[in-house]
Amino acid sequence: MLGNRRPIVTTTFVLLECGNAASRKPYRSSVARFREQMQAGNRIVVPTEMDWQNAWTAYARGGPSAAGIVDQVSFIVMRRLRITEVFTNDRHFRTAGFNTLF
Image 1 (cartoon, rainbow, N blue to C red):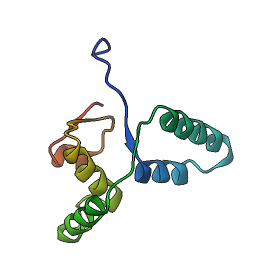
Image 2: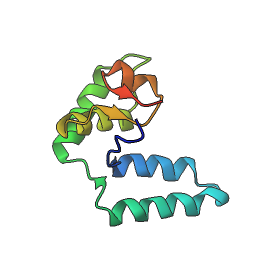
Image 3: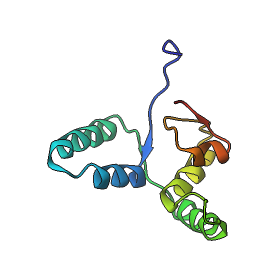
């Protein structure tokens, strides 16, 4: 697996979620550096208006154990970009048909 390196991409929504979760002082600079590196490498995807609308439609259909809105946006963007692997262990991604990498 290590010899099979793939570029890492993320969305603006995921970065917002990370920044919010890691906003305590010791982690803030790490998240800010990560965002700068991702932006410098042109690896941040800005969801389109259609991605946004489709994610809210999927979110509205979901039941009590369904994925949240940030995950729904991620699913839509990943499908649009034909991304099948995700660096998470979030069960919602497995349920949505993606290959989780840990």
